[in-house]
Each structure stands twice: as structure tokens, then as C-alpha cells.
Length: 130
Image (cartoon, rainbow, N blue to C red):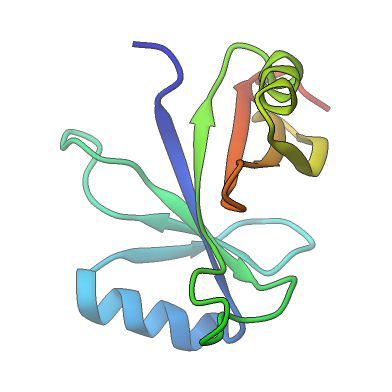
């Protein structure tokens, strides 16, 4: 089936505190990704088990509050074309939250907002992306 969730992201004000929480609660492992950002790859289990892995990084906006209890734990969907998915999303009433960008050696990434204000990642695999 196309358009499967392939990645999630956890936004955290204090990434070390968040890492400790997820290590303690779920036994997840964290590996620093070699980039300019403070970004950790999250390993949620072995590759021969069902499930997905994700990322943890420094929050870019305000943290959750009583008025806004769900800030971000973003799932990313594998799509054949980020551009086509953005077009489809905006026609369906969504918006571009973060424009398309390259993840070198991985592919193309963008974030859309749905009609309810939730954020969804879009990823097109392209190992040649630069």
C-alpha cells in the first residue's frame, strides 16, 4: 500500500531529558545524526520487527501548553512526490507548514498542516538528493 508512515519526529525543549524519558519508558536507543542540527535518530526496535524509527530534535516553536496540549510528535509519510502531495494537501484545505527541502543522501522533505492544525511530514526517497 502506498503512502505509509515511515518516520516520526519528537520535538523537545530539552533533548537530553526527552532521550532519558523515552529510553526509560520504551527502551528506545538514540544515535546522534551527523549534522549541524541537534538531531538524534531514534531506534524503536530491531529491523526484523514491525514498526518504524524516528528522530528527536530541539523544538523550534513554543512548547505544548494547556491551551495547546498537542504541539508535535510528527509522523512522516512516504509519498511518490513531495510536490504532488503538497498540491493535493493544499487543494484539500491543508497548508504548507515547512516548504520542501533536501535531506542530502536521503530525499526530499516537507511538512504540511492538515485541516485540524496537525503537522504531517512528507518524504520522497531519493538517495541522490543534494
